[in-house]
Length: 143
Image (cartoon, rainbow, N blue to C red; front, side, top):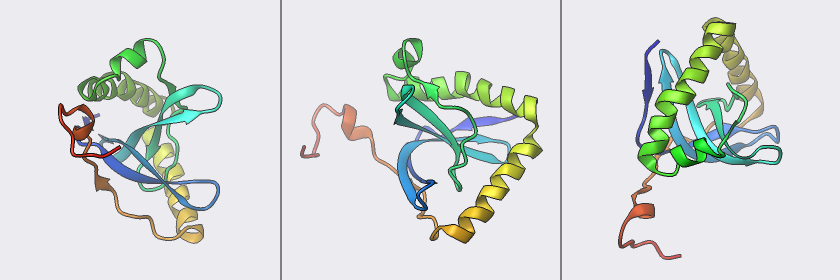
């Protein structure tokens, strides 16, 4: 299994139960023919988490990964986040694929694609996002 993590942050649009596309910013994770995204979000049960979903459907592949303790420290920088995705998150995804089988995951994603095509408007495009301003010494961004 070859795993690639895109260091460039991107804006994804994930399908919601409310019948719309929710914009989320995160990183793409390519595993063979599967393209997933890891996006930080707030969960009412776990608090701050990483949501791991398929990029064209929003189909959640893993349970949210709590970003607390060690995970919080590792994801406190852009480089640390990418390293965390390449190692720990990638290993969790590999375990899932080995346990349930890649074909089963693909079937679930295809089912989600079909549902979304019938119930949602067309998905907005995935876009690259500039996050350099966050860590820049001097920023042109007005708060």
